[in-house]
Length: 364
Image (tube, rainbow, N blue to C red; front, side):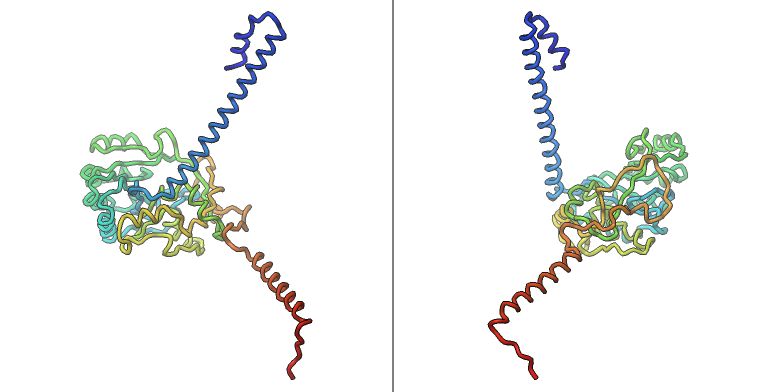
């Protein structure tokens, strides 16, 4: 109810004082209703946040989708790439290892994975890309298989590639970058071979850049990061027999190698598909934070607007305004000094209390 409606209700009342009194009363009711709606919305939002956090820490019934790099490097040079592909050297997923990993994954999951994202880097840099399609489809007959690409090399693919896409029911999901690509030709090729072409975001939306801030000191709160991260368990990655809950932990080795850093990946940051016993263990692992979560400063992740190219400097991944933030669950060095000083003080105090009771003589 707006003020105009209230005026339309009370206008006929002949006594001005009474009319104004009723008008004010109705306005007060209106304001109370607005406050109640705000409270209700606030409660619903908090409930939704809590629900999503509970959902995230509850093992799922199966993996929704899993990402696999067919090529580590890329033919684009994106600012602050979350897969560090602009920093990566030329490297491909060895096809024999890939076959063994997919077969083992099938044994563990009985084929119950909704979707595969074959990507990179840029997957089409792998000249044998089409052969990987046959391997995944051989074992996962009911799963969706997406080829996630920037589209640059699609017009250059020969007929064997398109036939492999057709026979293995591959969906092509390109990301649209603000670069010159003949999308009409790509659409015609996909139409000719009856292959779904579905833009990863939206055909009318061009890729924008984001800054993914990393805490080089590893002082962030792992649990909070895990609960609030949009990547954790939503971008599960398979890399040479190991499953990671996100692409950043899976690909941080490119960052370490390029910048000569040592952001640590331990055996607790992934699950080895050749050492685990069943699907349940994988799903339970994916519902918990990993030690590596302490390196992501997700509160500082943000979009920077238009797509930009990388200068390959470490500042693309760091935030100089918070160099010394400490995890709440980590003892700070200055706290340790305080504790040591207190212990010395306490010991001296005990000594002074005991001194009148006992005589301490130097031994000659």
